[in-house]
Image 1: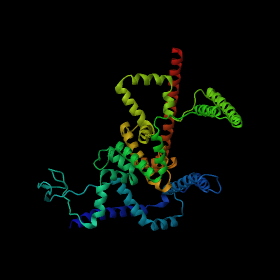
Image 2: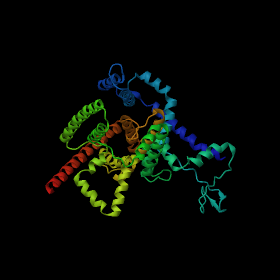
Image 3: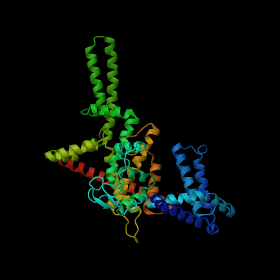
Image 4: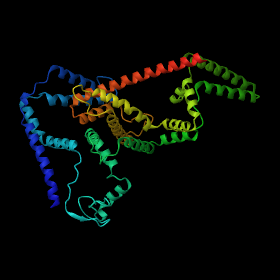
Length: 459
């Protein structure tokens, strides 16, 4: 009886989708305008770029333009009439079953997971013996659905025990794959019982990505072990390397008694000294020698050296600073968290409306960006086994154009807008992000110049 009752809403849901799609199919297609010359030219241009033999592009660029062509064709066909009227009606009737299922899936995306119906029958809790009405015990919280363990359910029991696949974390990952924008809006609007917090998702997915990368690509683990085995050795600059080589060759020349070997070592030392002089001249022109560690380059500036000395004079601040410095070196999650405020500000600017108050505040935008970062990390983790390589030093494994399309898809669901509006708003968001980076870089350069000027004056 219960199975029959639960199937009735599903049948009604499919019936409503069928009725709506039938109305859509019976709409008058002659009311749509014909495709214009500009749209035809745009499609031909994208088709030309998608044909790799005519235009020398890489495989990634060709795939991007092919995807953009299909996306443009879909949008134009949705708003304009391309085929003749009889062909259009026949094509719509042919695709009607697929249209019904796509509409049902779209409504399911918006609606999300529906809570189970409330059971009013009294039940005795098997854990504490309390009589209650509902889905969970009011005293201990145990579910009324506590079936016996059977052999046919051993696979599900093992998965739930080891990976906790029925928990919030797995549910959040699953919804990030097929309804990310709707899920983010549900979380911001207060429906949070089924989802893991966004910042925790970033750290967990970063750990899963690094674990997957080290299992698939063993070279990453070997390089990491080499770095950790020599923590006290600092990377040498080119000048220091040449100086050490010259000292080693001079020591070998002094120890040998063979005149021919001494002469050859002398010639080698002279050539190395010329190379050292050239490198020193280039370093004097550039100002400072190049280093592999960008953070150490910044901290080597006199202004930051004084600040670091002041911090190290206080024991507590010194311990905190050393911990943050070690944590910041090569920490992928830390680098991703630094990008969240930047993208949040750019997104708020891009979707700002004067006549309508902001749908989300700045903190909510940061949480939204954390979920988007988790989504990209999840896809990067799924991509690593197929690529066979991993770029752990980069923020994400997937290319930029794919990240751009993900943002378009997420914003379309989050703001309930059209594909075109989401595309241009995403483009505007990345433009604002670039503008903010330029402003921050300019301010940083000015502060560094001011700090160096005050240091020179004090000296």
